Length: 67
Image (cartoon, rainbow, N blue to C red; front, top):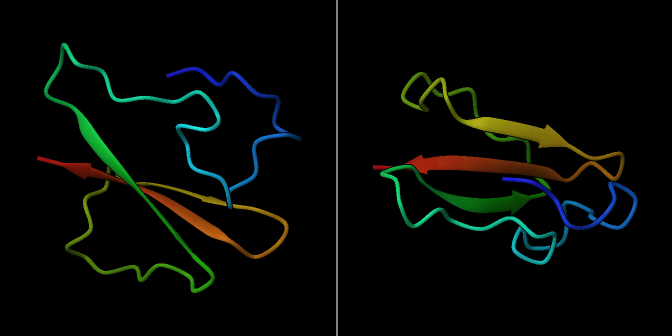
């Protein structure tokens, strides 16, 4: 994945697809975007591969791996 927009233009409130990210069709790695104003739990059942980013506006954006 590589972004099409600069970091200033691509805020967590936007869809990752709006920022130029997309699912690869030739692999088994799938993800879905979840945006929330509440901090995601640190549940031990959440896979360690899950990526979490935080913006300056207190939005949390999580990429969850889907198997």
